Image (cartoon, rainbow, N blue to C red; front, side, top):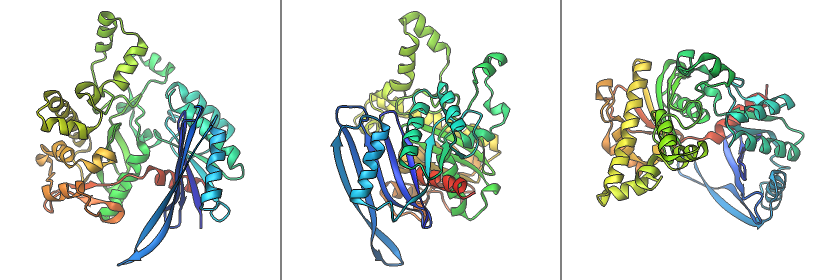
Length: 417
């Protein structure tokens, strides 16, 4: 039995999962948060097979354990995690990780595959912090702390941007001064790559065709949102760019807008760079238009006749359709369209509205199938649902994403090499 520990580290928290790779089963997961505060918090959940119910479908029990205590830094946080395993299970002596996989947000143009962490790789991750100042330093802090906790196993960095390193120069180049762009590494990088890769491969396996034969669109719709055009397993276009701000309307992010708006606000409102940054990343999107970043709240407000909620929803859907049409043009049509993440998996009205105008491209949604997913209908392999009609030329799916499992798979591939 081989297990992989997956770590997703933030500036004041980290999440983890221990995954048994032979059956791709999560044995335990946890969250250590409020690192550096007077009182930190730790949650550890253990999963265990409980019974077998018909047709060989196993059911699982879960037990969650919580602690509150000072956690001054990430190193202390990993000690808390190790104590949770020792006290509550599963015992790491019985399930020793063969490797530790780390989510790293930005790999720039340097990293295009999962990479064994070495001192040089750590230096590169640190240098790339200029492109992701809120994420890469925190990711690196998690790597450093995890290496102290698990010094005898390989550590592997899996980069959110790596999947999009197949973009062509025409797709990743911004039309600005070439020397300035080169000097400051300004180009489109794309994000959510781990999710887009997982979903596109899961979709291909579900429809029973090699991923190399398929043209796919994947909509990753959560509080952060992106769509990627995938041709033969390769990302050829994606909506996020130099940062995760470009593209679709999101919970608190604006997505695409005319950059001259920033000049206008700076001149007329006296807004600083920090003000503009906060505006576009934290006070825009659905929140800026309708007062909430949660589509469930938006839908509830629409039911009450709130005009700002109606407009916010229409803008959100308009952008989805805009990208769907553009990416179908880039691909020359699609074989599969998939929806994933919190909104993509749970909002049938968004899925239907996003694809409503695509009958010309062979897309036909089955209303009953689509809305059944939102009511928690059981899925097929991996929880995947078909929501298109039998006659639709394009297969439309809801595919639950599992970024942790994808990180574990990529980590094991490097550790086993």
